[in-house]
Length: 116
Figure 1 (tube, one colour):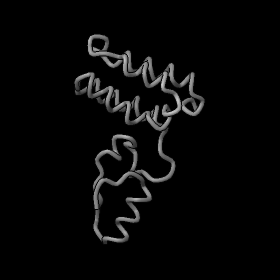
Figure 2 (cartoon, rainbow, N blue to C red; figure 1 turned 180 degrees about the vertical axis):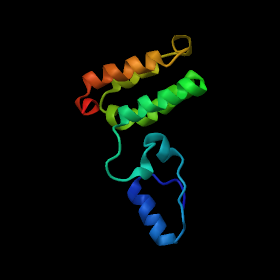
Figure 3 (tube, helix red, strand yellow; figure 1 turned 45 degrees about the vertical axis):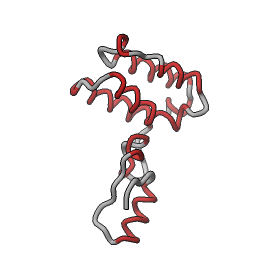
């Protein structure tokens, strides 16, 4: 019981263990809605919601970028150019989340599955 990466793994773990809950760490970084089951929001939408929280709580830009890498990785894995562009948003450029938001909007235009 731990480090669950998919909703199906969570369900299987609950059934096998009889526990009331399961734990996840890195799985939730890549899929914040992991426990939502079917009909999960798009990663780009989750990334934008994460940025709303980042605006409220002001984490370091390095943490924001790292979380966005995790959330957006499934969509951008085949686009190293976009991953590289995300990686070039540095702290001095990111006193706000605006550069990250602009990146997500640009990526939505370039990656069809992010626009759906």
